[in-house]
Amino acid sequence: MKAVILVGGQGTRLRPLTLGTPKPMVPLANMPFVSYVLEHLKKNGIEEIVFSMGYLPDGIKSYFGDGSAFGVKVTYVVEDRPLGTAGAVKNVAEHISDHDFMVLNGDILTDLDLRALIDFHQKKEAMGTIALTPVQDPTAYGLVRTGPAGEVLGFLEKPSWDQIDTNLINAGIYVLKNEVLDMIPAGIEYSFERGVFPRLVGKGLFGFGSECYWMDIGTPEKYLQAHYDILEKNVTTSVSACLDKDFVCVQGKIELHNGAKLVPPVMIGEGTRIEAGARIGRMAVIGPGCVISAGSVVEESVIQEGSTLEENVVVRRSIIARGAQIGRDTVVTAGAIVGEEAKVGGENILANNIRVYPRTVIQEGTIKF
Ligand code: GTP
View 1: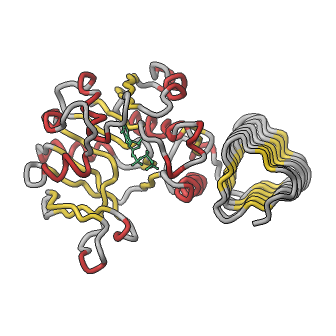
View 2 (view 1 turned 180 degrees about the vertical axis):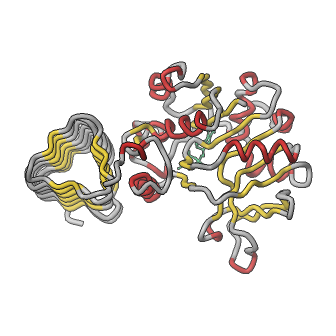
View 3 (view 1 turned 120 degrees about the vertical axis):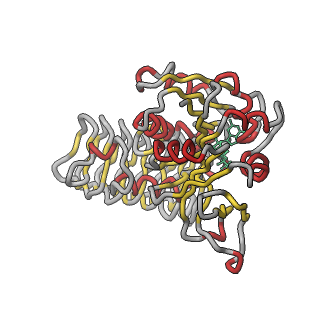
């Protein structure tokens, strides 16, 4: 079976992380996010993959190449304008064989049993099967109502509590019969969620619910949560093996001063230097080639590749993107994001979900909130 991975979106909710890097290439526990999707597909026996791209495609192509380094075969199709989820699949139709195929949103971290999903789809002889996942707050999502045999009865968009009779949502993973392609108009923006699926209700559309791990990394909060879940092994990924029984993953050679502390769960990328009195963790991922200077503290945060924290910096529940520099005694906290290669001078306080855009320069002591 072939899989189409949709990676054409701009990832606006994850800005500024996605301004210079497309969402699929944003590092999650030190690997481009979409490589988790690839390893999950391969583990489930799906090795032919079509990337449907639009926004910033070049980095994805040069990283994955023909896919052989990852044990899969990859084909790329770039849209000249956004076609929506279904329009994007129609656009890659020539690369899909006559059989059933899978479609995945490129921003989902899951350990869903894809083989069980395919088996279910084939046993039902379904036109389409939507993977479903339960959520705690059903009012925030589009819900999918199913009948006793799993047949989809209808969709409820952001319902009020009195309308709710299910907590299952569309998990962004589908198995479809080739005939579904005939329902999608060519060359225009068209969506599965609003276009194709409502038309398929009562005509062979099924839902496959499961209690697997599922997270879409589309917002900064969920991006951080996905890191915490990987670090705690709430989801099984290739990183799980590196996190030893002490929940410490050190990738290759690092420089760790005797007086520095790693508090698990924690992950440190290759070539990073951690100086005296620094404390990393719990729940911290430091990318490769970073410098964490003396006395700095990183908790519940992500520091991407090649970033530098000068002395006595504190980073809590925040994200520092690739190549950023944070000056001494600065505090980055409460959902702040510092964009790629930004330079933040010393003695600033960045808090309250502040977004620092890539390559911005903030002088010493200018921001205090
Ligand atoms: P936001 O702008 O933050 O909503 O993120 P997004 O652009 O990724 O949109 P969304 O999360 O709704 O998209 C779900 C998945 O579909 C992501 O993997 C997107 O890359 C992908 N996607 C969304 N729209 C398109 C499109 O027009 N073409 C292609 N090829 N993929 C798309």
